[in-house]
Amino acid sequence: MEAIPHPGPVPTVPEKNVTPDPNALKLKGHARRTNFRAGVAAAVVGVAGLMMAQIWVLGIALGVFLGLRGFLNRDSEAAEYRRIAGEAATQWKNAQTTWMQRAGPDAFDRQKTVLAGLRREWDILPSKR
Image 1 (cartoon, rainbow, N blue to C red):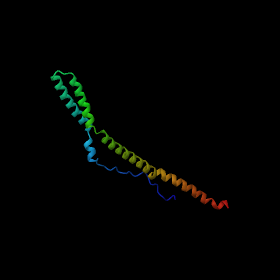
Image 2 (cartoon, rainbow, N blue to C red):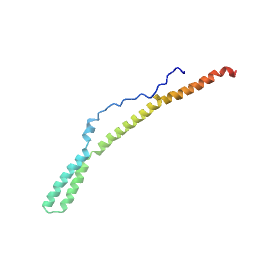
Image 3 (tube, rainbow, N blue to C red):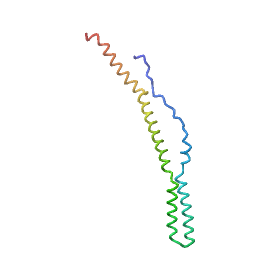
Image 4 (spheres, rainbow, N blue to C red):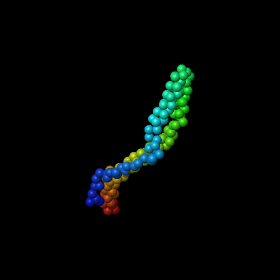
């Protein structure tokens, strides 16, 4: 038992570079583009209303902005990708923690202590006769 060398530090597990889903990449920056498009449409309606000297058209411009933002909104799709990415990150962290606990020198030292105790009990067994 004493002849077994100590394993040393935990070997590192290299992280694999993964590429995001192409559909997820399409969603990148979508909220900013949606706000920009809705803002441009609202500005066009607002400027047209000001040129006609109609204040109520500003309300329509605000309605156009909010309506387009709601219509073009894809937050639910993005939320699904965020949820999946969060779950994957949690699983990876749990796997790393398990790896450190099971493959580390602490586990080796604990088991070696248990085995040394068993050996002491075995060695004194004849004297208990």
